[in-house]
Image 1 (cartoon, rainbow, N blue to C red):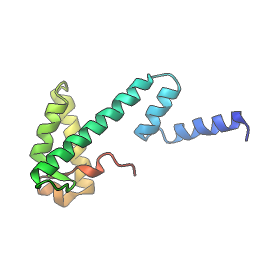
Image 2 (image 1 turned 120 degrees about the vertical axis):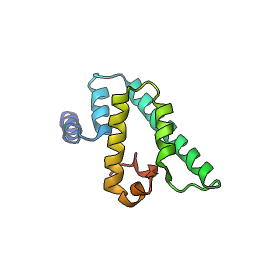
Image 3 (image 1 turned 135 degrees about the horizontal axis):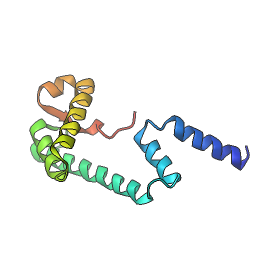
Length: 123
């Protein structure tokens, strides 16, 4: 395959899977629509969130990591972490969380527990 064909297929693949947030962001960086720092910033944000979830999990379970934290702790931590979000944005975030958890972990959600390990995994 020529360089041109490879580049075409690469871009075509990114556009095909643009529904995936990672592919969409990579395409935007590649096309110069957003700065690469946006990607770096988003990656750091995700790492920081996962660290906070794990810390809360371990504190509540005698140093053990279970992959689950109480909904109350989760919501409180989100409010502190995303302190600049409006009430409407925060509500949208919680609605998305509820939809995800009800679909993936309905029994845990009904027990007021959030399974945080799956939130950032690729499917």
